Length: 287
Image (cartoon, rainbow, N blue to C red):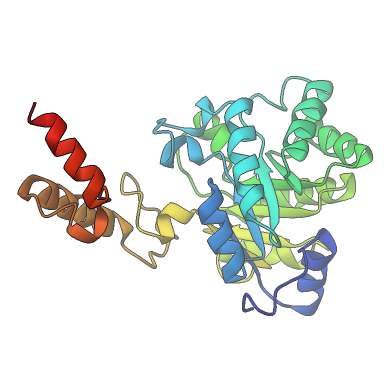
């Protein structure tokens, strides 16, 4: 969809219609005003302010260190840039797992920051109850199953989930509970294609896949991965559409060379006094 065609704000109803019509949903992460603005103008349906910002922006070794204050700052920046896209904000680790009341308060803060919905991981009974209460309070929730990064240590590392019929059925069972509780969409991460397809076909809410094959209702990737900007880790499922790491490095090297050689700034990049004022200044310096 071109930027010219996409003028209306994407809503939950838009995403549900996409699933019904078999039209793929597009999602990318963004963490700042300008990136969100460019993705929005390009026609991206959904922007995720992911807690992955902890690694790709803030340099943490995992998402566990991201705070609510950080998420609010980045969410606000993204929402100022995205005029049409549906913006989803990740709820950081321990911002929704302690109590339902705290979860509601923190989710509300992200909605106040401009988000269209919040995303949280997991599907146990407590999380289902949190989703239900958020829905009843008027806070749209995107669920997240399969590999859930905030449960990294419990899962024993970056492991594919749903690798058997029983495991796929378990994910679907959790997904149905989340759907019934009011979740408006579901992110499926690192799930075999066949399992993701089975889960998608048995839900009425749209599924967004990341490393979950071709048959989810949409796809999401981390912007730094598609732009070739983050080089510490490259997931198998992440396709690189650009090489900003090289572009940025070469631009910095060219700048360093121009400054040290005196080539920057050039005549057209500087300001001058009028001849009269310059003459006065020169006379002053000669005293």
